Amino acid sequence: MAKFTVGKAMTDYIALLGDLRYRADGLAGKAIFEGARIVADQIHANIQALPVKTDNFRKGEVRDPVPAEIEGMLEGLGIARKQTKNGFINVKIGMDGYNNYVTEKYPKGHPNAMMARTINAGSTYMKRHPFINQAVRAQKANAEEAMKEIIEEGINETMQQ
Image (cartoon, rainbow, N blue to C red; front, top):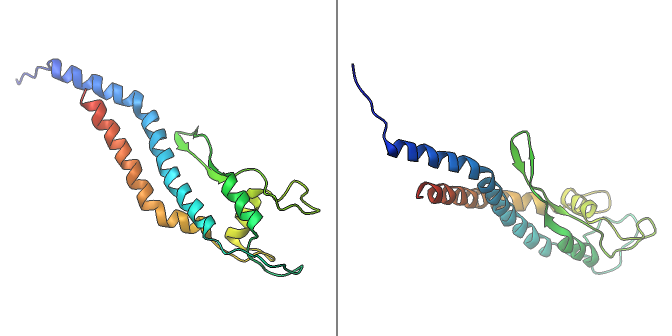
């Protein structure tokens, strides 16, 4: 019958795999934030490239966003803290706060998240400019590659110990 002896090298390898297991969540979170940062930067650039309505408009007119709406979205753009649910780690890119475009209905200004959805999808009073959809499509491959590099770097670093 064959004989198989496991030495110290196998024990060390198993210990490295255990270390990698404990670092996995941290590595995944770091990678996901980097991917989100890449997409958020593209969204920021797309917001800056939106057409701006500078002249007056009539009620009921379909229009482009006004400068206050764009400025509010730029200031409110951010990445939320990571959330772990059912084994998945998620982050959200979105808009927070209010812009300075005060109306009777919105005395604090329009909510930035509402304006982002309205401009991205269009409405009866706002022209459609899918700036979020375009950013996600344009940067998906770059974000995935950056996340892959961070994960591989973390694995290599752990296995070199």
